[in-house]
Length: 139
Image (cartoon, rainbow, N blue to C red; front, side, top):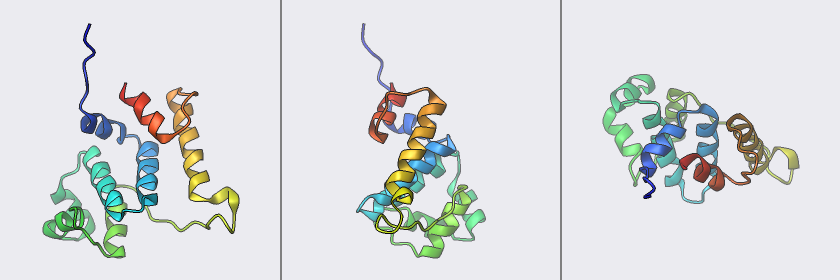
C-alpha cells in the first residue's frame, strides 16, 4: 500500500497556526546565520495565519510594495519594519542575555523550554529536537 505524501509547505503552514510552534519556528530562524531565514519564517507565519499582504500593510502602515521587498530573498528591512511586522502577526522582539551572563536564559535553553511545552501539548514525549518535532508532526 502506497503511503500518501503531504506537501511540506501546506503541512508547515498548518503547524504554524499554533502560536507556540510559530514562536519556536521564528526563534530558530532568527538563530540562523543567514538573516533571510528569519524573513522567510516571518512570511510563513503570516501566511499560516491566513493573512494577505494588503491586511499586513494596513496593520503595519507599510506599503504593500515595501512588504513584498522586505520579505523577498533580497530583503534588508529596517529594525522598525521588522518590529511592525512581528507585531502584526502577534509577536514581539525581545533581547535576552547571552550564555556568558545567564546560562539558564540563553536562546538555546529558551528554545528547549518551548520545545518541551509543544511536546507536552502534542503528546510527543520522545522528540528531542525541533527537526524531530517537525518530522513527527508531518507524519
